[in-house]
Each structure stands twice: as C-alpha cells, then as structure tokens.
Image (cartoon, rainbow, N blue to C red; front, side, top):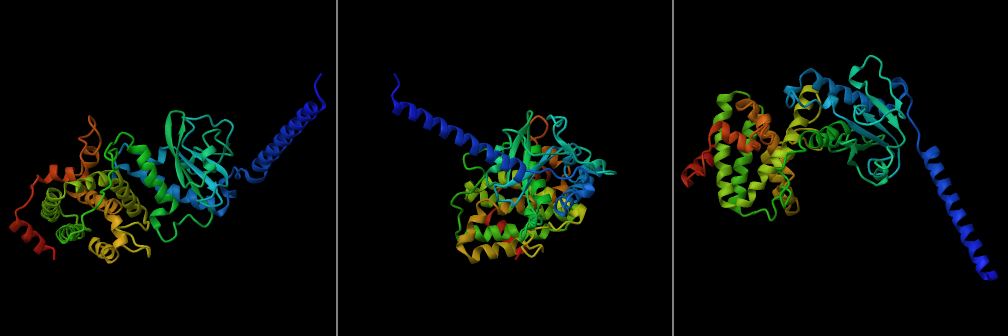
Length: 380
C-alpha cells in the first residue's frame, strides 16, 4: 500500500506541474495577444515608421528595377530578392511584434500570413506580415540586429528595425535601408565567394605601424584621394598604375597586408553598392561619410587614426571597406567588366578589385627605391 507521504508527494508534483503549465500558458498568451500584433492590411493605414520603411525600400527597388547594371550587374535584382524585416521596440531589443516577409511567396508558404496591399506600387506586390515564422523566428528574441533565416532552402536576411532608429543616428551607413542593402548583398550575391573564408577572416593582425609602412600607406591613400570623382580613363590609368606600384611595394615588404585585397573584395564591394545606390537615389552615402554626413578624404582619415593608437585597429579591416569601394569606382572607368570578373570560376575570374585593376592595366611589380620615391613625391 502506498504511504501517505508518497501520496502527498505525488499530489504536490501534479500541482507544481499544473502550475507551471498555467504560468507558461499565461506567458504565451501575453506574448501572443499582448506583445504580438499585426499591422493593418492597407499600406495607407500603416504607422509612420512602417510607411517610412516601405518608402525607402520603394526608392531602392525602383533604382534596381530601372537599371540594375548601373548599380551592380544586370543579374542582381535587389528589388526581387527575399527580405525579412522585424518590427521591434529597439534594434537591440529582444521584444519584437511582427515581421514583414517580402518577395518570398515563391519560397515559403504565406497562406497563413496577412497580405499588405500597396495599391499602385508593383514593386511591393509581395509583402506579407506575420506574428511568427515558427522555429525560424525563435532567435529573433535575442538582442540581435540582424541574422540569416532560411526560408525553404533560401538564406534570407532578417533585420530588426524600430521607431526612431531608422536613420542610423550618427552613422548613416547604419540607416535601415543602407544597412539592409549592404548585408543582403553578402547573403544574396556573395554566397559562393570565398575571399574571406581564410583563417583570419580577411583581417590583418598586428598591423605594422613603423614609419616606412605608414609613409607608404599615406601615399596610397593620397592616390585614392586623387581618384575621387575622376571619370576620364586617360586620367585614371596613370593614377591607378601608381597605386598598383605602391601597393606592390607594401605587399613585398609586409606580405600579411595582402589580406586587404580580400576585405576589399567582400566588404568593399558591398560598400561600393551603398555608394552607387546613394548616388542614384540622392542618398547620404559618399566617400568615407563622416558622422556629420559629409565625405572625408582618405588622408584625413589616416591622420585621424594616427592621432590615437587605439584607432589603429581600423587598419586591420574596417578601412578597407572604403578602399575597396574606391577601387570599384576606378574600375568602372577603366575595366567595366570587373563586377563579373570578381565572381568565382567558371562565371568569373575570381579577381579581387586589386587583381582586376592589375589585369586591366598590367602588373608593374614592386618599384625600385628611385621609382617609389618619384611616385611618393607626386602625391605629397
């Protein structure tokens, strides 16, 4: 016969189990009905934040629909790529309310989602809202800004946005439309690119900071400044050849610096795309756009880095987002096919922007000391 104590213990556990179930049920109900909510089905009834998001997307999508080859290649159509936008209380918050699933009806079941109607806007004819994407949306409860969600077999950028945070604050490259454009390019266009798959993920560790290296880097940055806004091939070619010579000298003396090429290939091209879309749509992103929203020069940025030793970490990777974008602009002038050449074999030639420039202009090799001095004198 079961003892009274064992009977009481069994009853206690049942009470605890029921209590836990009730608490979890109440919590789930609070999340689903209290936190979770769907936006209106009509674009005209969306709140100001969501309207601003879709106005920005429409502007970008129109640029790609009208002339994709002017931005990247004719085959990259950001306006038709799937995208997930997560409405949250903050871009760093765990609390989110609903997601927009854009351009994804061909890769995932949207029958249980709410279609959002944008009358007269064919660029937004595939927009749905939902409170959940099942297990795929569980990670959205983490305080992350963006992630990759797989819909069907397709990796898709999922990015949080929030009221009052759409413009990126001091850094306009973090404005939602620009930030999403950049990160989506990595996912949509660069899945097969392997430039940053090495052991150091295209980062230059222990960047040399002796006077000889910094002098050559300053010359290279002066050359990059000389390329700014230059669209005459006869002017660009000799400047770009000087750049190739200086970089050859840097790489010969410090071989680890070659990782710069790989960062330029991955991040520089995404930064280039930001610039091009901004130019076409009248956006705020230019060359080395500062916190004040104005462009800077490469040499000014280098001087700023040298003022504070803690800023030298920017020379390990981040600054090459911009040098890569600048090379892309030069290649537009002297080797317009570079955007295909950067693709992996057999589609392209697996040329980094630096390699594409060498292929177009010839590899000068490392210059002699006299030749190097002559080049440096031209850009002082």
